[in-house]
Figure (tube, rainbow, N blue to C red):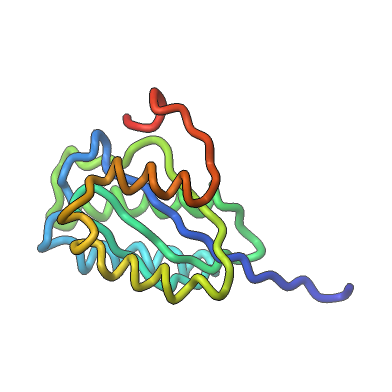
Length: 149
């Protein structure tokens, strides 16, 4: 084949260190927009970035030239610096790990709606419960001792 093509859709989730509520309402819109820009600068299609004060969800069409780990590392590194420099806490940090789950094209609109409605979901569910549900939904086995740093 003379042309390399890919359509790799992923749902990425990560939280602040110790799930501290450091992504305030005032910093959220610009911080989420910044993360989307970083993703696009990496050649990825960022459909949605959203979340809560203690975690972030991204719906991404991954470029064929970058792996998931490099994408997440770059977004987390640059967003951490941005948060500290643009009104966030000077102690802002992300947790060490992340979740990345593949989705199909038919699931993309459901995922973007889910990300848009985070505040509704979290009226009745903690991030930890949400994440456990995601792991089960995507069929991922995890050891709880290493999920929450």
